[in-house]
Image (cartoon, rainbow, N blue to C red; front, side, top):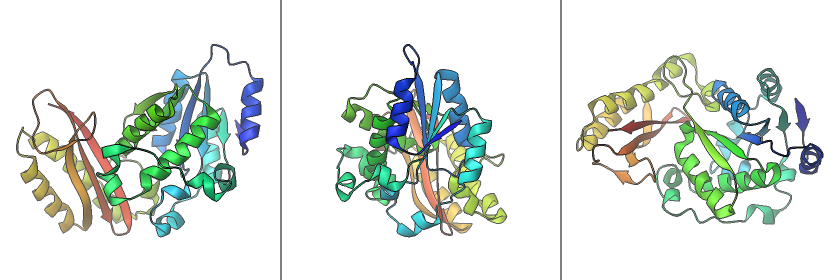
Length: 282
């Protein structure tokens, strides 16, 4: 695996290679890698000739400065995991490489309805920061395929919107959520949970599965209210628990048979914020 820290170094290397008729796959991350990230790398290797991963903790997508400070950094282990799992290039830029000046942090994106709900509502400015860094990385790497995880489902739809805004010829591939044996969705933030908290955290997924099993066309509101009460009894502080249309995340309480829908949840367990979702076709 080659480690490259500068944009010019990456572009020079790629330009010198003969990629005619070959494809580049890209997995953007903020490090603290886990099996979910590695699953993206493995999927990328199946599809693309060259696999590029980036590690960059993007400061402009954190609306909470304390959350940024606490974000886990495990770069030596990350490099080892990427090498062991067949990554070809690690792009490891510093902050000045991505944001050389104040102006480079000022762009605004028209994200419409998607920015006003769920994560957009509870983390104002978050998706603007996500789009800012992903646009820069896509322009630097110029991949054919972009791999992201379903755990950040709203973010995936935001990036689909960004690709349209950029007029970029890149295919977004959304890979399934990777889970621990307990059902807890794998996340870099899980390292901040102690053993007791991990057991409690697994209840998020169990709650979504329970809702799915009991869900009929018009009973979501009742299931939602009971689930929030049950989660708060064991120590969660729920930001949201919603049912939405899969294609555009329109929030709904009723649905039609045959419709693709998704249940989404975000909740704090002490000071660790967890998200999860479950796709359903009725």
